[in-house]
Length: 112
Image 1 (cartoon, rainbow, N blue to C red):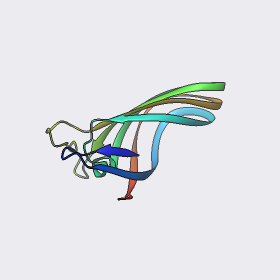
Image 2: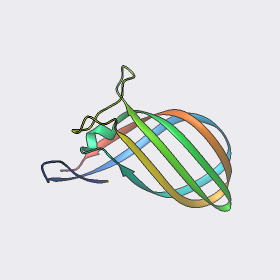
Image 3: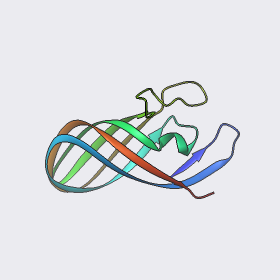
Image 4: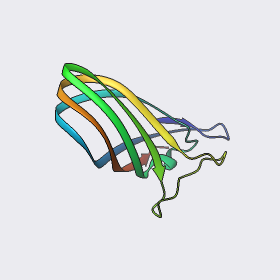
């Protein structure tokens, strides 16, 4: 991941996520593009509320919207005081269908 902070510095990092949600059935592997209004990679770490849709019949598409949450359930805010969100969309292979809402936890590793 890459992010340009409000002071103009670029930050680079890696992320991994686990979550619970549903309903969905099947198995798929995807590559996605992520866009966010976070102005610091650390704002994307922690809890998130996901809304997603996906469909694959050998090849397929996926889309997800996440709202970043503090541990007390309030919205994480960026430097402009906006609630932090991230959207991702992409495609991949598999046989799967899903439309759901769930919670996730994202671990961020800042590389610089």
